[in-house]
Length: 476
Ligand SMILES: Cc1cc2nc3c(=O)[nH]c(=O)nc-3n(C[C@H](O)[C@H](O)[C@H](O)COP(=O)(O)OP(=O)(O)OC[C@H]3O[C@@H](n4cnc5c(N)ncnc54)[C@H](O)[C@@H]3O)c2cc1C
Ligand SMILES: NC(=O)c1ccc[n+]([C@@H]2O[C@H](COP(=O)([O-])OP(=O)(O)OC[C@H]3O[C@@H](n4cnc5c(N)ncnc54)[C@H](O)[C@@H]3O)[C@@H](O)[C@H]2O)c1
Image (cartoon, rainbow, N blue to C red; front, side):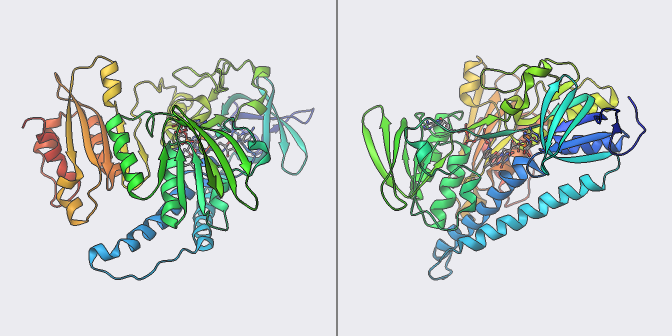
């Protein structure tokens, strides 16, 4: 590998530029990888077609969690009376909410861009890349020019985009996705959401708390299809408790304009067809990989039936020297997973390591309020694997700290292997559920038996202290 040469890659006779590595997409794995390879002396090109920071920073985690924070304040102010505080009538300044979100996103994006531009050996190329052949890319630059780049190592980190479900009339109507809904300048009177997964629930609760009427249409018999039924049922109760209508086992058939900015949506369930009247439609039915424009077949890179790039456990595609990291390879689609893909590749490319993505922890948090923190196996997964396990459960209305804060919705649930006493999974639906789940995850990472958490001394009155009580339920 050549480690010397000009910063912008060596220009070949025919105008092509040669790098040691090219990363396509400045997502959650691609940016740190490009920075690390460049720091190690490699000549690296990072190609980004839209905005540095990718989905998480610009359209995903950062903006949603910033707006969710505003929604939680609205919720708490409405509840102020419960705590003996009189806050009066509340009103929402959506423009200020959106402005605040834009500022946080801008600061994250610009911080990331500055690190890239300040980095020696790293060229940021703003344009859209596609393969011409195995080690060669054509990039349509944002300024209209075209460039050809070459490298022995190419990493695809192009992420995903919102899927569009099949609904008759959809293409003639205004429908929002998770990105455009965050740029509204007026509050929806009645927001209809198709999909009861992460995006549907996080936005559904957010807009309800902002003051919109909200209906969620979910194809499956439960919300959050992957989760255990008892947890999903409790999430449903929380949504209903906040005044959100949820139609389970239902699918939209047809959308029509109902005059002005009103829409009418025909929905079919197993029992009947109904028509809903609303003002805005949000599509939250999953995401598809950004692979159709990449000309992957020119480089011999195979994809699965939905277009996700096939990789082995070391993230190498079916074409040697070409890797795929983050959401574009399918599987769990989270920022921390893309970041861990970066760690795996860094170790293998720079240190000759043999890291793999096998058997790693996949924690996640659904940022509804109260949060759902998840790690390891669910009860249904453990059962289908034929595991011998016990289930510990503690409702939050028995957690001292939660009672003091008047945040008693939810339950702690953990699975323990009957023979080894190891914790094999947990679902913490409750106030700061993500943080409590992470404490359990640390125990799992250290291979601690549940008894260590049952008998450990934790400061009183913390939420984590209740892990004593949670695991005591196994022995009572
Ligand atoms: C609304 C929403 C909320 C989310 N909230 C969370 C959360 O709270 N926690 C969490 O862990 N995850 C969350 N996620 C998921 C998280 O955003 C993704 O898992 C993460 O961003 C994946 O990163 P990535 O590295 O795969 O690439 P991405 O961040 O998707 O970046 C891919 C980049 O590649 C660029 N690109 C694509 N094609 C090309 C091309 N041909 N040439 C050049 N550049 C290209 C794109 O413009 C983009 O910048 C959320 C997602 C959404 C949509
Ligand atoms: N907190 C987080 O970590 C977070 C937050 C938001 C998004 N994300 C990521 O973004 C990805 C996309 O999220 P998402 O919520 O769009 O997808 P999802 O796959 O989580 O949920 C989509 C839901 O829509 C339902 N659905 C699909 N087609 C339908 C139809 N025609 N009618 C009715 N329901 C339908 C599915 O049954 C499913 O429950 C997730 O995979 C997740 O990894 C993560």
